[in-house]
Each structure stands twice: as structure tokens, then as C-alpha cells.
Image (tube, rainbow, N blue to C red; front, side, top):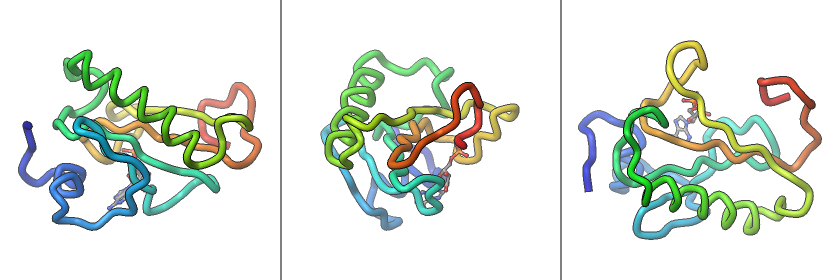
Length: 118
Ligand code: AMP
């Protein structure tokens, strides 16, 4: 499993930095965002290090992340009410942690057509 030194989320995967785990399997970890923007705000990450979605992500990791999104939505009780999945990629999108992650957001009404969260 590839990990990158000085990557915050690789350290969370390794257990060197604590997180509030919501879901885990052999390829994926999901944990609560430390600064939630919505009542439900969970980050789904591959355990392998990728900078972002444009970093040649292996199909197996992509599928595992999307399956985990579904598991998280179920576990967090937003599968029926609806939720949003987004992944910030690069500078224009203000990506701040350079380890691929999918924000799973829900638990309240969001705007329609606005690329920001609310
Ligand atoms: P982005 O701006 O898309 O790169 O999102 C990075 C997210 O990581 C932000 O929503 C942060 O609140 C979140 N974050 C940063 N550090 C931690 C941490 N130690 N545990 C959980 N979430 C974090």
C-alpha cells in the first residue's frame, strides 16, 4: 500500500493522527470531517495515496470509494433524504488536502445548481 510521507490523510490511514471512523474496508477509510459544513459531512478516502481524482486512480480504488459512499450514506441515514458527493481537484477548486477524498454531505436541504455546498 503506497503512503506518502507528510500526507495528513496517509497519517490518518496509518492511525498516527486520530479520526472518527464511519466506515472501513481493505481499500477505503471514511471518517468525519473535522470542520463539518453540513449535519452529515464524511470524507471517503482510498487508503492508497493519490493526489486527487486526476492522479491515475486504479479502477479498484475508485469502485471501492463509490461503494463506500453508499455504505456511508446508509450508515448516516441520508440514503433516502439525499446527499451530495464532491471531490475538489486542484487549485481552482481550492483542494486543501492533497490526498484524494470524496466529501459526503447531507442532512439538510442544499442549493440547486450552486457548485458550492449551500
Ligand atoms: P478539501 O478542501 O476538499 O481538500 O477538503 C479537505 C477537508 O479535510 C476539509 O473539509 C477539512 O475540514 C478536512 N480536514 C482537514 N484535516 C482533517 C482532519 N485531521 N480530520 C478530518 N478532516 C480534516
